[in-house]
Amino acid sequence: MAESETLHQAIKSMARPPTKIAERLFCQVKKIHTIWLLSKTEEKKRKRMDFRKQRIAQHRKSLPIASAEKRLVEEVRKNDTLVIVGETGSGKTTQLLQYLFNVGFCRDGKIIGITQPRRVAAIIVAKRVAEECGVALGQRVGYSIRFEDETSNSTRIKYMTDGLLLRAIHIQGRQFPIDILYTTELETDYVDAALITIFQIHLEEGPGEQQMQVFRPAPVGFRKVILATNIAETSVTIPGIKYVIDPGLVKARTYSAKTGVESLIIVRTSKAQALQRSGRAGREGPGKCFRLYPESEFGALPDSTVPEIKRCNLSNVILQLKALGVDDIIGFDFIEKPSSHQEIDSRSMDSGTPNSLIFSNTRVAFHLKLPNSFLPSSLEDIFEI
Image 1 (cartoon, rainbow, N blue to C red):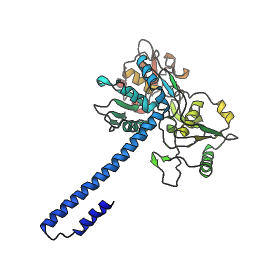
Image 2 (cartoon, one colour):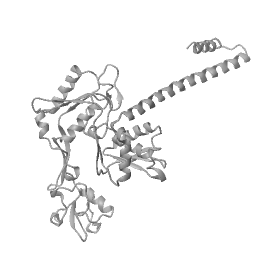
Image 3 (cartoon, rainbow, N blue to C red):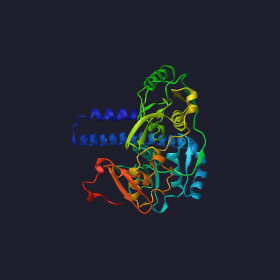
Image 4 (cartoon, rainbow, N blue to C red):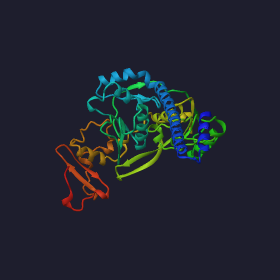
């Protein structure tokens, strides 16, 4: 600090140089002062980056998945397909692919692809992994979503939307304990109950570590309250969350085969969803999950969520499969078979409906109910896939 003040005083005293020699000296001192300030700034920046790298390295070592690194790599080598099941915050999405990259799975130009159910999740996780790897986003680590491709020829770890999971290894435990709290009675107005619980937490519970609103730190002395859809259940992990309020409900996509209409309806969550939601509170320390229903209601919930393929319109799925050259739709090896009312067979044909196209091959004939934008302008426009 003394050296900096001395330089400032020297420059100030030379504000009006009397001679050309003094003017040159003034410029030289000013240049040295600028270089000195830049070097100090760079040094501080480098120290901050080194400190952040150390914190990231420590965090990676503390994740539950770290203890299973060698076994996971061995299992991936031994099996063509593998499903890894781990609780929220165990490090599945960010760490496994780095383990595989480090042992040479990306040699000879190969790419590791990681799927996420939401666009925002693919972007956020890709940014995080790029930072952990110490590389610029779009180089070794990138993402590809609809209308946006942040990859290059050097990308070897690629996040994207959609995907499949097969076979299982279970990674035990989460990082910190979570207290589960229930209501004494079933709440009829879950929105009102959620708001009351928010204020109850604010008045009675200590603050979180550094609560975030979308990933931005809260101002000092403020508490952040994040109202989220079920995207925060599995797709996006927000650091700093200590309390979770679970109304026990979710908007689920459904499809009526009789009317051909898709809709979002509010239904009870499954036990698996409830456990995922509570897990959000235990990422960085002990947390609490306030469930807005009695404990007896939890026992009555279904164990798992009905797969979306059993409750959605299969028209797009069928068209995609046909476009990929899969003609035997009935015999296709779905991970989860569509429900009985969705099954495609000759009995489901309804050539009388104006918004139906009929496709056929040697094994099966079926119809697809399509939106008006897909309708042919004339009979000549009807095509065979």
